[in-house]
Amino acid sequence: MTWYVASTIMSVRKRKEKQKNIPVYENFLLIEGESEEYAIKKAQEIAEREANISSDGLFLDDKAAYMVFEGIRKLITISNPVSIDSDSMPPINGTELTYSEYLVKNRTQMKNLVQGRPVKLRYVE
Image 1 (cartoon, rainbow, N blue to C red):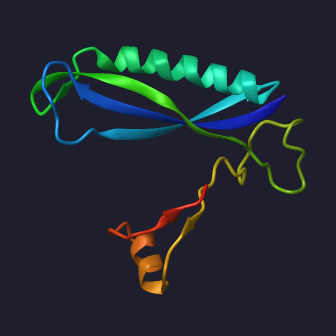
Image 2: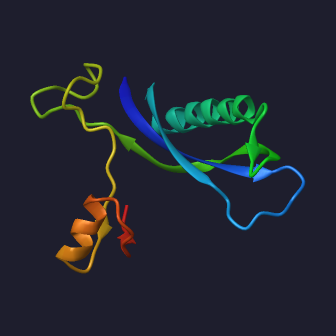
C-alpha cells in the first residue's frame, strides 16, 4: 500500500467571545492506504477526533475555547530514497514526508525565511 502525508488545518475558537486573531495549526499525519480517497477520509477522521479530544479544558486568552478541524490542505504521496520502492517498504531514514514550494524575491528574503524571520513570500504548493 501507499504511504501519504496529509496536511490538516486546525484552529482554536473562543466559545462565547469574538476574537481578533484565530490561532491556526498545520499538522502532518502519516497515513497508509490503498488510495488518495481512503487517505483523505482517514486523515479527516483522525483530525476530527483530535479536535474533539483537544477541546476538553481548552482556553484561549483565559476564555473557554474549542478546537476546530478546518480541512485537509494537501495530501502528498511520500517518497522513499531512490533505491527503495515507496509502496513495498514502510518509510525509513531519508524518506521525504512532505514538501512546500515558495517564491521569494531575493537572497535576503531567503536568508530571513531560513532563520524564521518575517518575510513576504508566495506559497506555490
